[in-house]
Amino acid sequence: MTTALATPPARRTSSCDVAINNINMILAVLHIPKKEVAEALGKMPQSFSRMLKNGYQWTFDDMLEVSDILQVGLDDLTNPDLTPNRVIEARAKNGGYNVAVDGDGRIRWGMAGLLGVLGWSHNPEVHGSNPCPATN
Image (cartoon, rainbow, N blue to C red):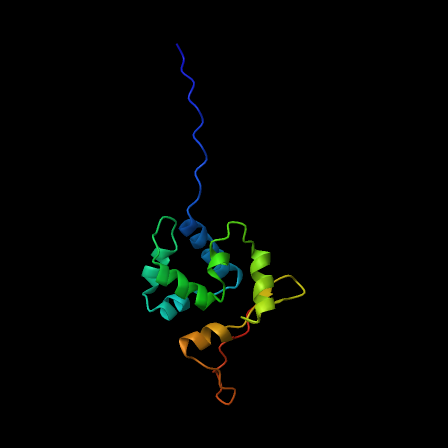
């Protein structure tokens, strides 16, 4: 006799895992180095990398601090429908990082917002103090 197994119900992704996926996407889309976000959080880069893996249980304070650093709301971080285009549009609309799309479709951005959080500043009088060097 054969027993048919019922298909298990689809697992709902936890809000924390949705937020982790969205944080990873935001970092990738805006080319924000994880090391700099870790520094702004006061964490070691290895600890922050561990936090960016699904299943990690974030504290509310850490989630709130990352949303402030990335200049996005908690509702955006936990939005399962967040897309790269929405991230770029929101960043441009909110005047956060200086995001621009080149003619060839590559995303360019400035780190003035993040550097301000870290307490760094750009001094045009000092050669080599440009926080946003040109990239290829």
